[in-house]
Image 1 (cartoon, protein in one colour):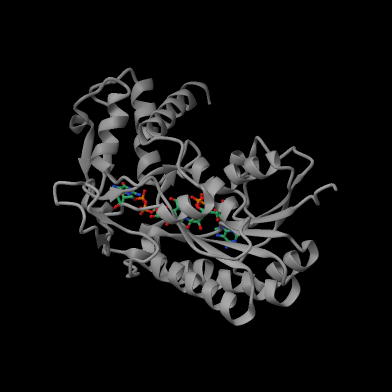
Image 2 (cartoon, rainbow, N blue to C red):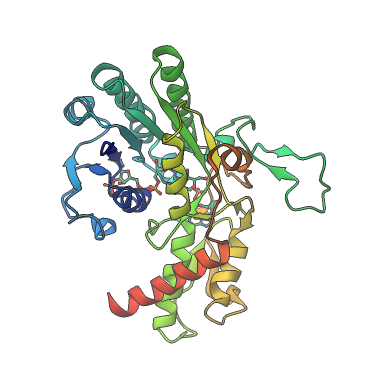
Length: 343
Ligand code: NAP
Ligand code: GDD
């Protein structure tokens, strides 16, 4: 018997994750409707590899506008809905807390209400985040202090959001659980740690660093090249490649029963260690002569340490990351060097 072609809908179609997820779903013969908000200039550069595919289409819609969400979901009746849209920048959320709440919390309720009322068989994936844990972590009593992995976060770590971004994402996360329990909606949330790629937004720390190295390299490593300004470079993040993460999102939606999973690399690195790896890749062993600390880039409240465990995803989904930290950093640096030269 022929398998039915699945329809997926992606909110946040122009973002980093959506671009990789779209490539993956097209390989699996899905039909995709990407939802993008109206912008005055074109911002579909991340979708170059999929935008002309006959199984990919874009529609306009804004998740803060329930009428548009209702209309799009009721018209397309998607088998799978991936909500990847968000005001995704943590620092910005301190300056725009209400807007962040509208998009990251209320927007998710708009999607859940639309599913409940107009498309109750759709499966929903919500982009939850390691920011929900704030400064919390658990300790593994079987390890010692000398072991870097003694501190970790997983599905059982208590949430304690440290930013307006995370507060809004927690409201969304709890709404997913509520709609699952109250209305039997198939909805799950991926608790994803940081993930990056050459398509990462330019204002996130990894891409800010690799873009800087691209420009510095183009200058011929000019000793007078303007310095890179950074904030808290002691912060530790558990960085993965976005390509690995979108595979995990899809795997979560193939389950019979909805459940939330942590996806991560399992190892935390400081921003300093990211700088080490990225600069070493272009032959620079002392990056400190190119970097200044700018106190205005510190956040009112910081998440200092993220290092996850993906045991549950490995056991139940068979998911594991495939791209190493070093390969991720090297790919980002190489592509940013190429971009400055040829774009
Ligand atoms: P991203 O590149 O910033 O993409 C966010 C997307 O949301 C963009 O397409 C953006 O559109 C769209 N969007 C913003 N406001 C919208 C609105 N009102 N209506 C419709 N769309 C709207 O983010 P990402 O890195 O791909 O992350 C995807 C999701 O995972 C986000 O929800 C993020 O919070 C979450 N997350 C990310 C990470 C990570 O490390 N990347 C980790 C955990 C969770 P424009 O292009 O028009 O701005
Ligand atoms: N953005 C930025 N810019 N961050 C800096 C800078 C800088 O100049 N200097 C130091 N940092 C530090 C931040 O203070 C933070 O501790 C760390 O670098 C990472 O910052 P971001 O790259 O902005 O990412 P994030 O961890 O705050 O948030 C990302 O990951 C979350 C998952 O943990 C985003 O993708 C969120 O949307 C996502 O939920």
